[in-house]
Length: 74
Image (cartoon, rainbow, N blue to C red; front, side, top):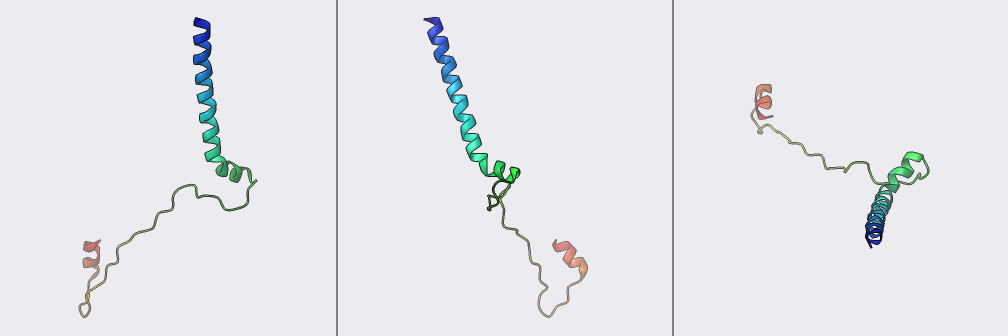
C-alpha cells in the first residue's frame, strides 16, 4: 500500500513538472526561435514598449525666459 501511495505521489509530481516545463517552452518559443535564427517573421519585443512621456516647457508669449528659469522648472 505504501509503495502504491509513493508511486502515486511521484507520478503526480512528475506530471505537474512536465506540464510546467511544456507551458514554459510554449510561451518562450518565439524568443527561442528568434535566438536560433529559425523564424525571420516579426516576434514580440523582448521587453514591453512603453510610450515615452516628456514635459514641454514653453515660455509665456511676450516675456523672454532666462536659462535659469528653464533649469528651475525642470
